Length: 247
Image 1 (cartoon, rainbow, N blue to C red):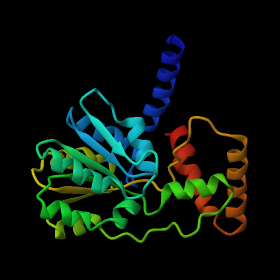
Image 2 (image 1 turned 30 degrees about the vertical axis):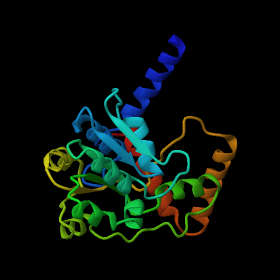
Image 3 (image 1 turned 90 degrees about the vertical axis):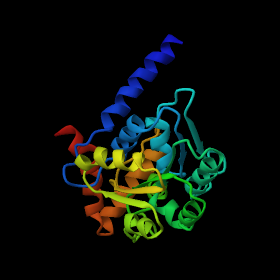
């Protein structure tokens, strides 16, 4: 037990060190968004999360206390599950805070559920981790040596789209504006959506990395440079290493 607790505290410190707002005027770190949401949500909130990176951020930064609940597609990995699950949970208890941690890809797949929430007067809260990509698919491709293809998302302004559906629609592009916008978002008594622009190249690193994954990632770096996409490698290094070491 003591060994496990020591290991957890060490891992926890590493995760907390990643959840910073040190991105200046650029996109936010998704870890920082998840940690701030965790701090500001109610003690009995119900969270739902899309598969992929929102599941990673939820599992690492949401504090469960015996009253909160976390719902997701953890066995089947069904994409776009967070929004409809949030509608279902809110329908069961309309007085409880229900927060959907949606990816931009997941939200796009079942965007019609915004109308379901509005039609049924469900005051759900939707946080969109908007990185302009199917980020977890990209990570899987990188780990096997492939240069990502077909994962770009040409997203609309989700805050404006939500507003047209009868939601409170908010948009955050800088870390300095997150807390104020989240406070307004969570206090709203009707459906609300906040579109948060987050780093695309943020790596959701697994607890352990296999030799095969390291080899595949090395091949990806080589393939990216040789195919004229070295700028992605530079962005990857800046997002995950340089900005942390030299901040």
